[in-house]
Length: 386
Image (cartoon, rainbow, N blue to C red; front, side):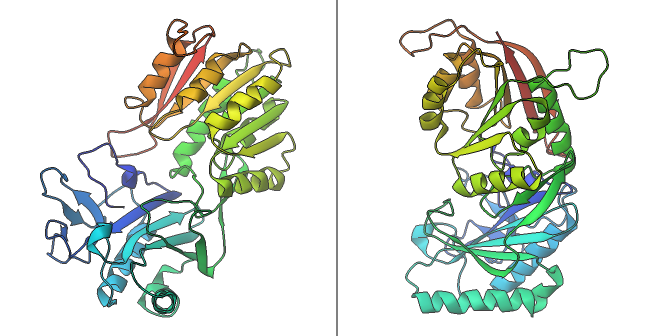
């Protein structure tokens, strides 16, 4: 993924073992977006800033935290672009077609590649010809060295969109790859979020599990705490499924429908019977769900794992105003950003204007997990109690 290395948007550097990478391409429609060799058809990462107009695209071959397989797929995609008669697309209004490529790999080396394409004014038949060229390149041509297990194609005129908004078309191979975390196997779809660093994910999820269901006994092992865990922004269900042996019930909420399908599949695949997953916006689903939960029904614990933008204020309000929640675990990939607003609203005095009527939470523990080696970033797990 081409990222601006001077900004906080540095997801492209989240690599190690099982991982995901998003590579973008430069555009010859803008002379400020070239590769280091001056070639506009360059696949890599952005160095520089938009404001200073000094962006250069650099490939990722030198990066220590990127799997070699990702580097190989990026090089092959770059070669494909340089052979293609179509131009790359960076700024939609300047034209071009070839956009990002996402690479997902698991610990067994299985590889999924997702190519994003802007149709502009091409006819469906013209798009089909280029899709066929892409398949031929990665299955029979020089790109076959990548040995892709899955090749997807998303045709869209939006920067980011879901499978429901613009379907991911499987051009070659299997529709999913699988990975294992803490003894559970998880299905990974092109549209679903999954932690990019499998080894560190085990540390992260183990930490979250132990904070959600602390072992208060003397004998160690895995205690049965009971109660209900609300898993907000649950993705493919990893946290809930991992915590499931310790609680009576898991309720997961997730916006991306494909991720909910994966979560339900993952629960069944792992023979986990106490999980349910609800698709929809958390700010819509959660307030209604809260009214249906009994605060005395074995206790309520919440875990939230939002994107950088943090939780919607209605989600914070629903959590804050549910008296049955005495323990809340917040997983943040950018705790110094918008998430700080959530922390303040969870911990401030009751505020009638903001409809925050419940007792305040108190932050009692913060555990950093180095999900992103060789970068200044880390995942932060915070425990709030009341």
